Length: 310
Image (tube, rainbow, N blue to C red):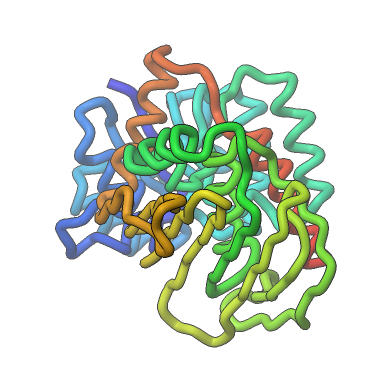
């Protein structure tokens, strides 16, 4: 059994699903896995004790005096501004696997430091862009490769809420996963930033190119609920990702028809989304897979910060 340390018991750390049947947090996913013994830390000791009691976990009192190398994996679900110091300590102490919430950081200089440290280490780092770990997104990737072989979309449309770095980055990572390309943005027109959800992360709209493909990205302002949509427009069809990524549809254009024909429709595409993420941690620890997504995420994080001028 592997020892997992969860740092941060907030929403994605433990609270999203604490009174629900779904599995949307690090804490519950580790608890439900037979492969991990869970340790937790939070600056709010009352919150830490509550989560520990819920999931039969052990509370850690002070992470910066704690020896990280005692743990096989560490989950970072604390605020973004804390990520750098925790990641640096985890890499330096050679933790085998780190699962880090996104964005990695709001500072380009910190990305460079982490990249250099990572390249000299054996630590594997997974950045939690959840969709790339879900089975139905792998099915979508295979479907795109089969239905639109050796071709890229003519246009890409994204709609999102609540921060370019926090939430539009999910769409950008999903594009990279589905189309096998790193994020490369050439922004032609950008709206004025509005800090409607995060102090350091504005919601913006933009028009430009993603790897030379025209992209239209609409950031919806002052929307309290999560909204996440991607449309990939091909000559021979259309891909629609809706409802926060929970609904996927692929349509095919046939020359004999004047309208698009539905090819596949999948629902509940991110149901219990933290289970496959934590399973990915286990598979790396167990030697089944070796690859993480840290360098891809570093490169995308750089592009995101360039767009929002951080």
